Length: 470
Image 1 (cartoon, rainbow, N blue to C red):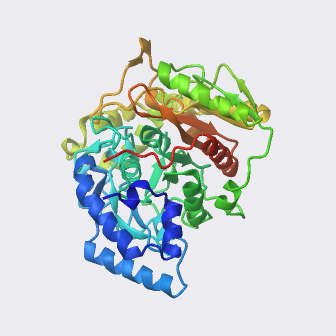
Image 2: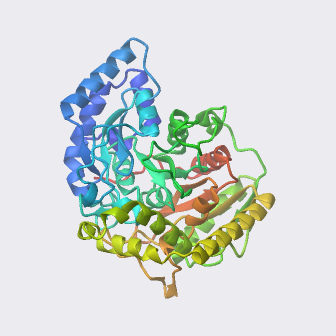
Image 3: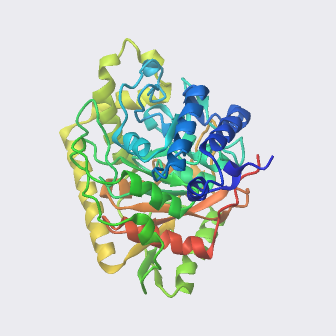
């Protein structure tokens, strides 16, 4: 049977519910059927609420819609990444140490999605503590791409990405500390946006967040879906001291406006330090020319910021060690071996190393300042190679050219450290038949500009509703 979930975007489902062309109960029944049929192959959703409860929630949504009281996301099923709290469901962080950790409250984001009428279905898989861009862990196992089940959908939002691309769920939360929205979105051909730091509040947390690289953001089928998602969750929260004020407008309304211009757009093929798979680079170069065709000025730039993969890794591992040291060495064997080895290595952090990291980050900041003084947007590849095997490993080189540390995220990490909004759009398929993404980066707080540029590209090179046949 042709499933509406297999072909519809979030907004298409919202409109069908509001017009009563589809009931919330029908949508939930189809969601449960599709999860039962396909999730055993993909392992995208790893914990679920009781189906009878879900059907009762859907019936209540239908009643609100029939009374004219439907909220923006009324009746839409959604999933929550297993690094984020959803009351009554486990937050395991993909770690055996936390497999019995049941959340007693919702995150700010989850609470806002529920308040908008969305119905929480379950949790989506993630690598242990979001450690890598391959989604597998000792609690729930390996998540697979719906495009090719031998490949990974990426990480750390791999479960959410696989669920969206496969049509298991129309909505799922994601987060991005070094590329964890953009990498899986690129690998499954979806749209992903890492917003400006603080745009979507994070928390409540069990400790103050000293590392300021992680963001919540949308990973969706279309750009308009992402804008609509943001409209439900942006705005300040007293639980997040870094949360930004509400922008004062609707992102969906902004996205539906034409992109002003002509814009000055920079294109970098390598950020000065990373090789890119030949067929992927050719697709991204061709995609960048779309903006020329739209009347904007695209100029290739050379050089880039300092390579930051090693410094980013050291910082993240140090923070993880500060959180997990109390479980060591007694429970060390319950953590993934590569994960805990990297965390333990963070004991080598010194004031000198920390100071060097700060110097590199300021060098990045100055590079970004100079770039966005001259240009309105930056275009790059999103990932330099095809999705690796579902269980790994990552390649060490591309066509004989060595990759820098954390090469999978060579193009994404800088903009977590710099706080700039960055999105990925599908530009085609590699010679292996797998989706390829192009990254669009904008000035800080210009999330609307990045979304408008992505939507302009999507109009010229539409990828929806071309999704994997399962």
